[in-house]
Length: 414
Image 1 (tube, one colour):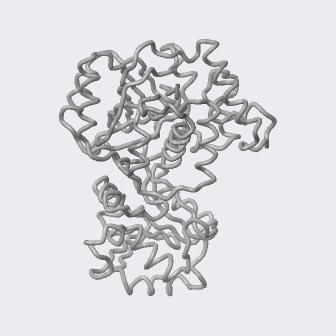
Image 2 (image 1 turned 90 degrees about the vertical axis):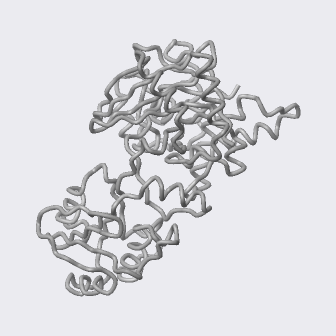
Image 3 (image 1 turned 180 degrees about the horizontal axis):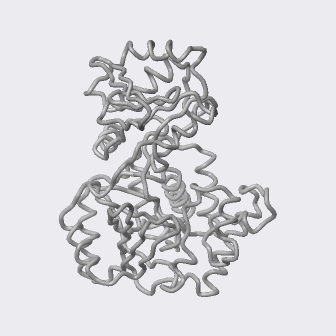
């Protein structure tokens, strides 16, 4: 069962939150972070992307950069830009995008749950990325940024969310990207007890976004346990920072593909090859969006096409084989275009649906890419089924938006 606990959050005073809060470390590069934080010494980028405090071009993995992270984290606390709560709390963190709000519960999740598979993943992680985040957690002795979990809907936890969010939020602001962020402190002992008890009855949590951060946080906690001869299991390092959303609150948006060439085929030959496994219908110059599972949108030569996978090209009983990302990867990218490794092939690129299908059109019309393929989004049910079956999703399958804002609350490991 999922063990969570309240914790003494480290967070900005209310009047400073918009100065401190930032986008996550992995959604922008060093130069973008440098520009976004210009003139703002309170920006969390000084802790999560501290290479911005060095000359441009400094390697973000330089040992000096990790040392600068902890120096800045200590300075933020000394300056009162980050202050630790006196008591242990859970928190509610809500995000608003396009008029729709999703509500998550901020918890300290259990390292043992991750190590023993009760926190389920659906993506492979890369060891080099894990090690980078492990160094960051180790040197700061804190989880500076949260991970993004989902859990099966639970009426008692929903009631806590509903009751807490009737009150005035601790933080309430709109970020520069237009997304709203709202944050409440749960300080009722009864509600805190309810959250702990109800999560204890939930068999599994699911990583929605942040596989590398989850792995790094859990591995550092596991490492600390191994080095402590008096280890009990309830020390703070046995837990890491997570925001847990009821599955029904979350929307996965599409994650699309653009390809540089047609593998030597003319557009006519390519469309003919698609006809083997797909019903191909030309849709004209107006943007066409996939209408349902197993329906794809193709942009080629200034025109949009609907591709519908023919019966027999997928197996509804295979949690991976039924995914549109698998169908398109096997029957279009591999069999027709000769792209076998989505992680390493330079002929393909990926475009998050947040950018819209117009971005696919732009990249093809510019001549940079030869064709674009839009996919119907994966559902939370599919994601959870895959995690439950022990399978791993193909690369670049899920895109969650909005991303969690970093800097609203931090979890110390001691």
